[in-house]
Image (cartoon, rainbow, N blue to C red; front, top):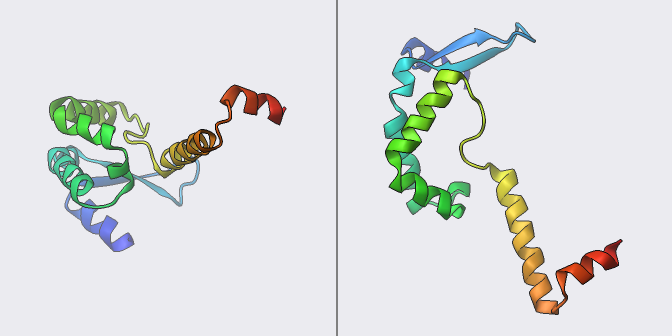
Length: 124
């Protein structure tokens, strides 16, 4: 990993700056040259979601929106980069796990024909 980071830094795609809380660590950010790769990365991301089993492909709605609104997505990526906004763009695995558990709970409720409101009152 360190060698890859070094190569990306040498190619001026990323820049490492010391972490203000721990000077031994480096925080890496894309450079202008790096952010210019966003359209290529978006296309790879869309391709992978279409052809590979990934967390992103399980979030079909998000991927469809990204595919249909490429320019808006890229504008938002650039805005976040400029403003150093580190909010996740795509829900991570933890969000997918929450959704999966919620779907399983709903499915179980349907199978047992229990009213969700009644079930919550029983749990109390």
